[in-house]
Image (cartoon, rainbow, N blue to C red; front, side, top):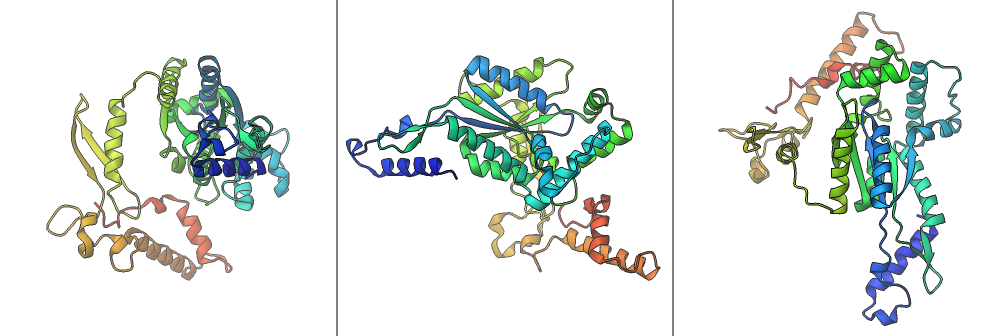
Length: 379
């Protein structure tokens, strides 16, 4: 936290403790409120995060008189490559350039922390605040100005980046998920970056979710978005409509109620929250064409005599989190399989002498074997 920010927080605290406004020789709390916003974008490669930014920029400047600052996280990969002595390369093909960017980004997260790239954006935003965002109180201390500015971050790839941004900016932070079907994204990347089909598949799969802890995990970030937009049309009309609705909602302009899809997904999400499955929590909602909720369901361990366990089961709760050694039964069974595979490969002489169980298991987990759910107790 910068010194100016710390001083501002201290002054607000002093004002809150005072019982007489005349005793406080600084502006009132309501005079310190900022209209600042931080918006981050997340979406699979080719979904159109940059296009979404361009529409946000246009609308925020023209309709809301906001100044907009843009932070592209991939730029920080190139800027920071020297920290890890990585070579970004020259005269690379489009596929090689994307692959190099992904590799260096992964290495930066591994060495500097999984939230490193988002932290760079936070640093740049702090610089804007220190130079533009503070005035002086009557006692000479720095106080935040009521700036109408938006910081747009394009685009985050890892859950730790999202965690840092939400912890830093709290209620002024919004995450927009940008979606387009795979076929549309493939077509865009083929045209825009001249990528061949084989390179496309590898890049898109790596972007969506890498097994390495420090790799790109768009899938693990995307579902946590506050708002979702679909960008699969050849023109921007529908995307502009969705973004304008989002801005209306956060600025409290015309009244907007949830769409049928939003209400239905909310019901499914709420049902998923009741699941205690240690592998994944899944909720479903069945609705009529008119949006009437017919029923909900979730995955979980079935209860003796029927139904599903709930928190009210108390000592009678036999879901995995409270049963035996409190481990996911599916993961336990897969661990047994990994060990059996390792032992058999070693016995048959199919492994090099220095092969380690941990390395073999990591390789196996990079295959679809990791996605097996056949051994789960949940139904």
